[in-house]
Length: 232
Image 1 (cartoon, helix red, strand yellow):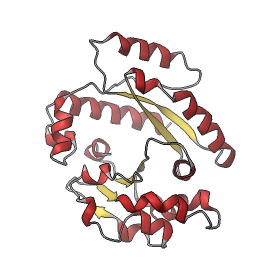
Image 2 (image 1 turned 180 degrees about the horizontal axis):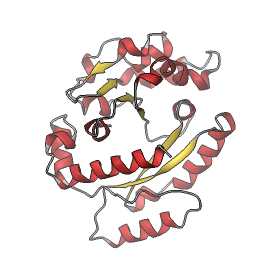
Image 3 (image 1 turned 135 degrees about the vertical axis):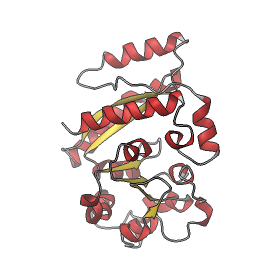
Image 4 (image 1 turned 90 degrees about the vertical axis):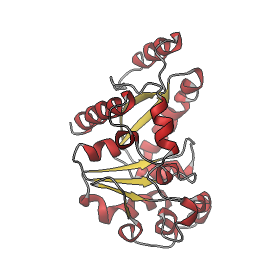
């Protein structure tokens, strides 16, 4: 999201993970967000625009999250057309941004289905490790279920992260991914770099924290590839 903003795109980042890492990564204390988060938009009808926050990065806005979001799936259980609640929340602001990115939790279930139903395309991050490949088949099966409700959803591609090119498993991961039929694998990967950890510790995206770092350059390259891919 930060890289796309640096590329002069107007971005809304929706933090849809109860851990609130996207929110804290942009400098917000998730314990002090109060009752103006994505949770209140989903459950209480708060307008997305009223919950949206500015960030230190030009053209990047944030719809934040905190631990309250844990209860959202249960709270929405009896609401009408519950699979499309996120889609309805974002509809009024959809045309105000070049891209809306939704950070989803690493789980499968009703909440993630809601997120996917609000999306045009999905980017699947895969860690270049034995654990990274675990569950990918379940993810594709889940996506097929979502397409029964939201048939226009497309997989934009798989983004490979936490790459250590010195390890053989990276090559095995890439070979396995390229064998997948009709699934695009982004050419630009994100290698392991301590600059990312330091940027997270300082709650600043790496493309702003250390612009000259390898990972910052790789994120910028990936962002450009994403733009070219999704604009087709």
